[in-house]
Image (cartoon, rainbow, N blue to C red):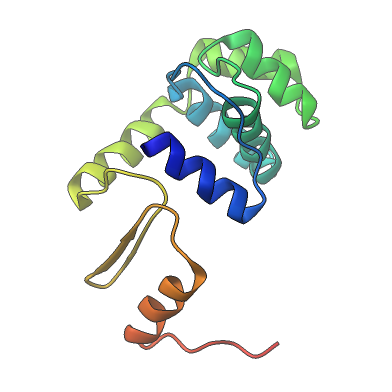
Length: 141
């Protein structure tokens, strides 16, 4: 049921979503994602990791897959391999996970604004409702 909902949401949003048969541990991808962010390549790396996992069914727990992803977005593969071996972003990911547990966040994406919370992919209208209920004004372009 969850996969059906994810597939439907991805289709509605125009996101790639393949027939993934297994779930892989994304921990190292999260650490490498923080490294990519430190290199101003976070957005493209996260998108590449999303596509690799959800559309292509790649095992993002494998170091070789992660190094290939880093290289595919213009990051140095050798440096990515070193980051994965030495894990300098482990503590930062641990802190993110601890904060999530403290806040009761159990799914992504989760939007927390004051006491309101939206869990999972939500329609645009739901986001607007939460923002308006919390006094956030819509910007004019």
